[in-house]
Length: 171
Image 1 (cartoon, rainbow, N blue to C red):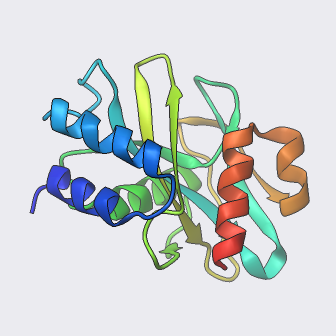
Image 2: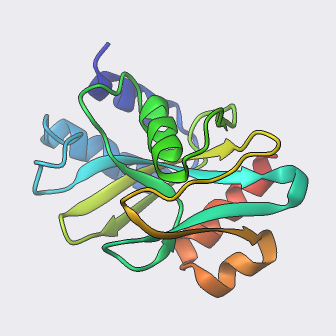
């Protein structure tokens, strides 16, 4: 199965945010290249909110280009077999933490936002950090920092806050 086919199946199975989910499906139907950064009309991206539930905290990256505190994530790559694999790869690469585990149940949220390259139709997952995890900054980040759940609204935008709320509801 292709990454495109996996994305369609994941989105069809996703039960929340029906209007936005339909927007994503229509985008893919209209744009066969809609999984890739080269699609100027926008593209599907995958992200992972790295959490440490035992300590009530979340790891955010200070994005180098956007200069905002965000969850780990980005563009799908040809080597990604599934959207969940893309989210896990992004989470691992950008956090430097090996052994992340996605929360079961598929995506936590969807979020459509404009970036300098195009519209991102982000499929958002949550990943649990293993006990004792130590983060390592990547070249895509200015900083990495753990924030207590109640600190996130002070540093991140509403999309990250909503992702954290949805993640905590799933825990």
